[in-house]
Length: 229
Image (cartoon, rainbow, N blue to C red):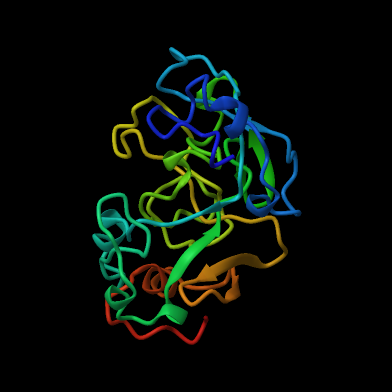
């Protein structure tokens, strides 16, 4: 796939679709329903949903959402390990590799789920969550915001498993732009799996506080990790 992929054109270019349409087992959680679902490129589909690429269930998180910090509930700002603009080194992860999330579940996209229940699925785009394709930068979580307990309002104090993302309204999104609108979500009872910076995999309970989860997203915030992790 690497040898055949043309890095000079977009992931959705006809030259790359024969490769990006292939499901990758390493990117698919066995617990996720409808594993053969596909994602589309909103930038070229003129408002329609044309499924062309295979999906995945794992995402990096770029940062803690400033809106969550602004709630004044003890969440500190901070950048994550993955970045579109920075070359992050091990030395930059001063909170410790074992205390910083590298990837976590953001499963089921572009279909929309809330609290374990299927809500809707594209087409059109407005029936789903922006992102899902394993090859799409828009499948990462651009900023961890949490949500309300029912998964309909952002930001909020629920960190895990209340929803797999914010429902699409328009594209580009007024807040996220061309980034995805995914959230931390899995189909396991009681929580999600997360790959930490040291290569270990931890199961994070959905009872975790939004403050502790945000501290795990931040790579250099100097926070004390809560006892609920």
